Amino acid sequence: MSLLVKICGLSTRETLETALDAGADMVGFVFFPPSPRHLSLEAGRDLGRQVKRRALKVALTVDADDATFDNIMDALSPDIFQLHGKETVARLRDIKQKFGRPVMKALPVETVADLAVLPGYAAVADRILFDARPPKDATRPGGLGAPFDWHLLQNLELVLPYMVSGGLHAGNVAEAVRVTRAGGVDVSSGVESAPGVKDPEMIKAFIRAARATQELSVR
Ligand SMILES: O=C(O)c1ccccc1N[C@@H]1O[C@H](COP(=O)(O)O)[C@@H](O)[C@H]1O
Image 1: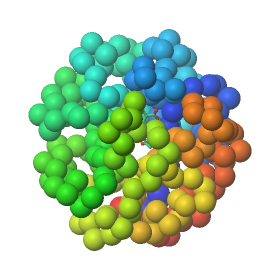
Image 2 (image 1 turned 120 degrees about the vertical axis):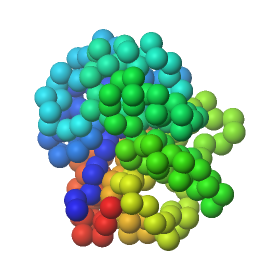
Image 3 (image 1 turned 30 degrees about the horizontal axis):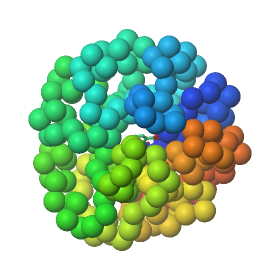
């Protein structure tokens, strides 16, 4: 099975085109105002049109309300929602039913205790994203460029597809895949020259490095 590569937090036509040309499977758009990668609905509409089915469009939200989902559906028509807040299992079910799109639930990981919620979410989500737990005083729940201990996933038995994120970059993505056996990787800060500023060369290097790990991936 081939490794899915997601480049998240794209906000310009140039860097989106770089990610698509370099073969990203998923391109992520952030709809969360405190993030330096936050997109207006109009920018999301414009970038969404540019994708032209060359990759899956992922809309990242954080504890968003129904009106926000409605607006994102209208502007971007995402292929999948990435839920990166404290959404409950019941809210996941509700979002899937109301908006008719698959959901990828981000779960914060710092210790093995964080995996206790996994069975509940795995019963409803279409994909799980394991991300580093943010510090308590963080202004956002992700996109902080910090990794977690990948060994916590070493013995994971999860039938559902899962991805990893948190502090990935071209230099460590192979090791992350080797340890976690994840079927996909997601990066934002690791392909930026400054928060919110994507770097075309870093995007290409990350996708190249991720592709080189292909044979290590199982899910
Ligand atoms: O990118 C953001 O600003 C962001 C904001 C709120 C929630 C999640 C966010 N990004 C996601 O966080 C992880 C890790 O990112 P990084 O590579 O460590 O910067 C990734 O899944 C992003 O999609």
